[in-house]
Length: 188
Image (cartoon, rainbow, N blue to C red):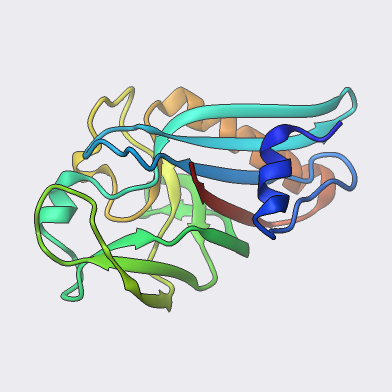
């Protein structure tokens, strides 16, 4: 039986990867009731192994932190990843030259938050598409506040959770030989 989160992804018209083992569905779940500067979202990985479907889920943020909302790196505003599915848009690489993470390797769509306040409220009427370094990485240790950890990235609150996530990603590479990862961001 297909996990409920994958049924939701299908309902939204996105691809679901059900064939074979270690064929990862990486899904970010953005809370509509977002509290600024908190890890109030979820990141899920759903896949099959020899025992059937597995679902892992961890605390994360899919929103930029307060620092970058108030100090955008781009004159157009702070990047906020637009909900959608980004097929093959990530690969294992070095996040800012420091450690392995899933790094952006193909265009993604973002909105821009320009008003320099601490609240995520982007202009959703304009979409920008490009390679902005929107990575999937970790904060330091077990962080309780996003602050400078995200300028638009998808960020794990806990570094040991992130290690588990990366181990699963590496398993897809070793078992299937696939080096690209699809990320689907939905809102609930």
